[in-house]
Image (cartoon, rainbow, N blue to C red):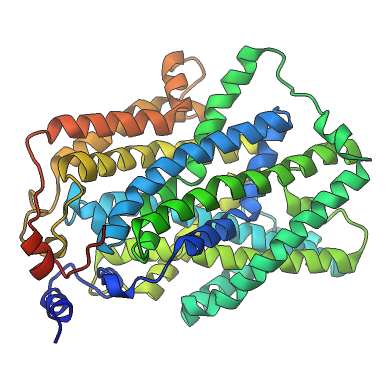
Length: 506
């Protein structure tokens, strides 16, 4: 038996160990630079990315303002993406295990659950998009589906026809979870070839129907003054960061398979900002063109496709949207929360059960309301949860780089009584830092969703909410550093070779 196999056998009986959460040995990591670039290109080419850009146009920006906002936002979020990814690449550990170093063995469930619930929301949004695409197709062939008796309360804002197709698409997602992640590979290949072609076809249609690119790009900004633009820019920028704030935390779930640090760093840099910007540009052009063609901006591509005359064309488009959404949903919104839920009880919850839990919560979040309008999509959903995830990112980066000095005792991340147990499994200093980072964003959030009456919140607190991710990230990170200033992590070369599973790479 090799040293690696022997060391691995030593932790399999530890309470916080499971196969899904176990560190990946260095000799079993096969992802190179282009694997990560392809991953980001695949995840970026999705309907929510298109809607993200389109919603900025609907919100008042012109084409170049929207593109610059998206490019800057994705360039900023790339920084914590690469920084958090280094620990996954070095030790082969997933996000929930990395979080144990800063929050404690049990405390890691706090950031894991916050991240998991948000992933459930994204799962619900993607499932709603896929289901509504099927509804658009069904409505062409069976018009009576639009007049089915109303069975849901009016306050839900959910019609019976779309709800029926949403539930059918949800069942399809759960069936794929039952089959396992390997069953999605062919769909990912289909998506990688089809969606770029479909996006370019849609771009061609928009340019042709609006008589050239000139009229589209000539659409003016709705902001009368520079001050009006900046007032919309910063919440929008925070929303752009919030779009991938989830992945900036759980990126170790993917970088744990990296051949080297350069592979994950260059792969992400090549794949994320360029693909998001290019696909967003298509969304911006098409959405701007809809105002010229139809007299109103249509920011939802599924609704837009439903306006085409050919039943066959619409049907093909809607089936393609559904299949593409299914592939993205499993890859981006099931894998990570399944790991997070598994961290709650490593010996009892596996990938499939974690996937089923994700699916149920995804329905309960009412995803059709989250994307009903641009303001709800960006200012409530994206900015709101960025105020939760920013503080977690600040704490984890501060801990790994400044407290631990990029050194972790891997075995003790799975040991019930060890250096990461803290007090009863919780690092109280990390929890205090998290609360202090979230707190400044709460009044602004409550004002935005109208829980607090207009004028009851100081304007500067509402302004803080516009920078929710930034405020939370820096406040929590700095507070954590101050509270943990007397603690450092050291790992000897001997420990890495004998007691740390021999998983570390530079």
